[in-house]
Length: 251
Image (cartoon, rainbow, N blue to C red; front, side, top):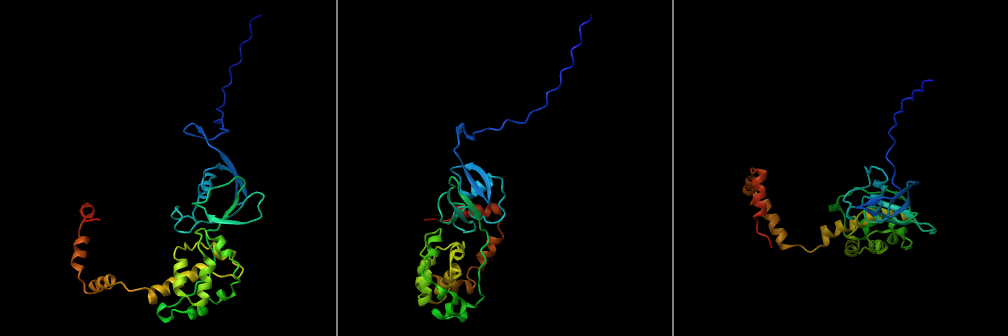
């Protein structure tokens, strides 16, 4: 009997790349946590910000992102933590994820914003009475202050607006990012950040001390003192402008 011929060996199909059970960075294992983004579970690096975790999970952020440094207020986020009944607020670009965090971004906060002519307003309580009468429904619950990612005394500047204290409104709301987190938590449905904007505009137009240097410079601009220099700069190319910029006198 002649020996049977061996059947030709089957070509092995290329298997997919093995999935790593552990994520490593520079050879060092990265600690991972489970978070719920828009209701779906994801494993993300424990040291990630909420925004970083959202992108790590594969989402492309088209709205709700701006400076990514905690200045623009575009990434308002609400979240809850395991075993905690409270709802927390923060900015996605500066708040770190936590194990079991259940989060959702609020890229746009609906808000009332009346159109007004600042020249026709008086720098007193009447401006708020006409444009934002809802502030007088404030129950002083301080929920707005608790929601503020900037730790501003939001309720206090609303109370200042009720008293017509324009300077106080300006001072306490000066660092507001207009993220809107205060407004979504307010039982009186006040849009606090727009009230703050009105206060700052009234202060700047009517109450802020005048700067002699600024007044002088504005007068010189109106008299076209710098027109010749402007035309010279506009005629320069990029390299010439760069050279001039770095050669300027600095303190």
